[in-house]
Length: 380
Image (tube, rainbow, N blue to C red; front, top):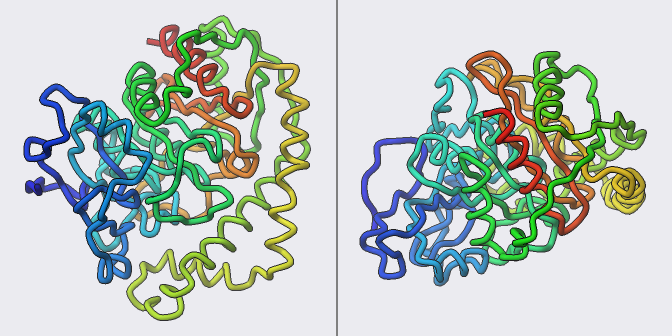
């Protein structure tokens, strides 16, 4: 079922013409290689996992509807090792090249899925988002990405990173394909009565590149969305709590790899797990307990505006070799809350677009998609 494709985009390329479940005219789908595809090993982008992996006996449940629709799975896409990083740099399987600028990071951890979509090798990428792992590469590669409501899409058959934060979502070049991909996960994500939000609460993050802020503001004006500036006093605490949960749970999930196979991990993973060792059980418990107060703060704001708008990334993608390993400051707090979020490219006057992030209450993915469609139409 494999077919050679000379690209770091893929860990295991697949030939859908040899797949009896694929329709000749089915939508092409790239599946992040932390999600089980029947008959293929799941590597999670790590030799430590690949060395002991057996071919998956069945597809992950999140692929059930895609299979039923005759989707053409074109490969298991590359990713940041163990899903644990925002750059998409993988020292073992190579780094997918950002189609907008090969000198820049593709974003992670769903890097291969994003690059496959941005480069035209797939219409839809299915990936995971624990602290921005769909939204980061969407922003870096100039495409759209949807993080779904926590717990909505099943994560069985998906290698975990931080179970309190893990979600499955989709990437696509535009909102129409994003909606098509979302339907393959769960039809509830694309209610037929889509209604865009007429209002948005604009959150301004410190140290954001001014051209990114200006691009977001311009897109909202062109789309005719009424904007209300908001403040979220709990943002910094929520971000810190999300990072503690991310690192603390990642170490628990990967304890065996860290204790017995850390010599084969990439340097950035060694740095992350070393940091995670300093997190005490009490600190992890306190961080998890921040979720409900944070959700209450967001609920108060979302009760007065249709959705919250902020950058997906506060800076343009870094150059490969000059990238930092710190998590993106614009995404993890949303994962702590569990709310759905959508990233969408908007023009910023240069080669690299900016990326606008829309956040809605739980199970309001249709509102996100409808609003994104209005913005997309206004700026293109």
